[in-house]
Image (tube, rainbow, N blue to C red; front, side, top):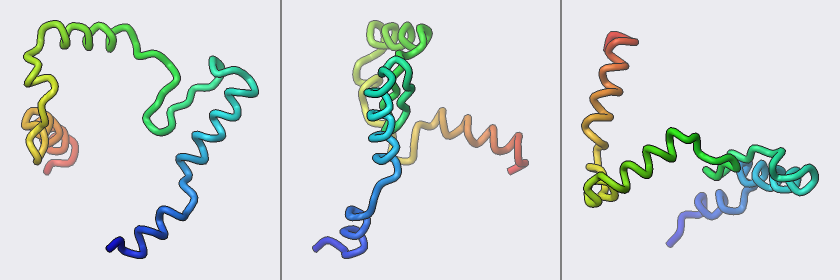
Amino acid sequence: MIPQDMIAYGRNECLIRAIAAAAGKRAAEIGPENVHNFTIGNPSVPAPAAVQSLILDLVANEDPVKLHGYTPAPGDPAVRNTVADYLTRTYGM
């Protein structure tokens, strides 16, 4: 059974989708090259050259299992350590 509050969430307007629709309408009016649509994880600009280069290098040289595998449930240990170090330096935690 689906909880009633979850059904209500689905019936309510979604601000992100409303912004995405407005961006699409504006792109039709003034041209998509003049609208930078960053809604719903769909930027309308190409990745910077450095990002494209890194992606190509990873695909060519990284172990596919490591590249495409799932991270551990608690998160990647190196990322967790980096965040913890930052919080320690910044907030003394």
